[in-house]
Length: 444
Ligand code: LLP
Image 1 (cartoon, rainbow, N blue to C red):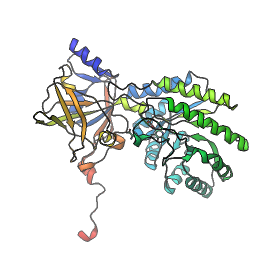
Image 2: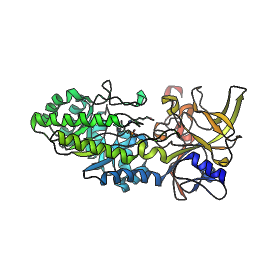
Image 3: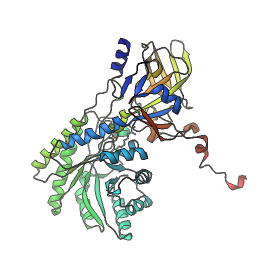
Image 4: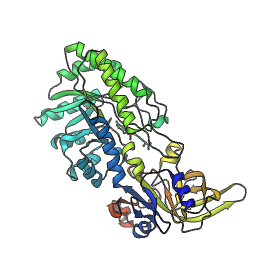
């Protein structure tokens, strides 16, 4: 029992428990049984954790005297079942492609609560969104403004827009996931916005609703948000001075970090929301403006810790005095984050949860690429082929960035909730793998 307690406290994760037979459970589901039922590799999401995170955002804002809207950033992980949860929790949705939009609409998500992002939306995507009466287009460039105007005109309708602004602020995260800095492919540079506004206001069939900025992702130090709010509110003032135009909505993007390893301690959702609201209130007061509706777009902080991946260990290779590799049945195809961002993870052996750590190992994937290493230097109990490995915090940007590299079928995605389990996405089959292959007719 003491050993179990140590293990649980080492894990320091919500949603986990150890049952009477010493088996690790997630949202009260026995993980050994789930691995048998759904096979591995397999993504598993706790419905309760997703809902809890949504409510943390809602409650944090509800405790303040402001108008607000929480947009879940679909790029983190979007499948139909997630749309149903978001709808029940009263969240809105940020989509960044026609595919995400189609997913949301086919799950019955209300179009007026959808915001359409993207720095190069195609004509077809814009037409699709406008025909489906998507609530807001987040306009990323002058080119796009013209395209949206042309399309709304030809469909004889109007659309609400929010302008994406690059506020020129650096965050201190991996450069690939920073987006608010001056040198960025996203948005309209903040200095150019006042001029650009003249065009926005004179463009037909467009209704100006507000401004947006997004700084980056996996942010732990919240000080860049203070700067962003200051710059964005100054911009709102300038726009007001130019033509008396009120900016009704201020969307400050997403970016709050998640806990991957035990050394990570991201700020709480409540602190993040309070910091944003306090700063908007202060800046608005200083600039003698009315307080806009505040929007945020969290993705990772809602789903990252709600998801885990289960793998089975196969080959074990020991290179004497150098390294011991445990190779799992997945890898960079289901988790490209280590090879892309050098992302760090923690893992435990589900079926040996009470065994004390014994050896330092490296978890390798099965893809034909030397860089396909999921975790370097992990302390585990002694392992044998067939052991079940659980990697924590794989809910955001894993399934959504997965690939069929080496023609590996994508894993199943399972939702668990207080002892119940059900599939959200079926495991791909070899038939799926060749579904879109065609043989050019001159080979026949
Ligand atoms: N809004 C916009 C405009 C975004 O570009 C993003 C993320 C979000 C909201 C949500 O940010 P979050 O709350 O999830 O940090 N693939 C990378 C992360 C890329 C983030 C892209 N944009 C990763 O795996 O770390």
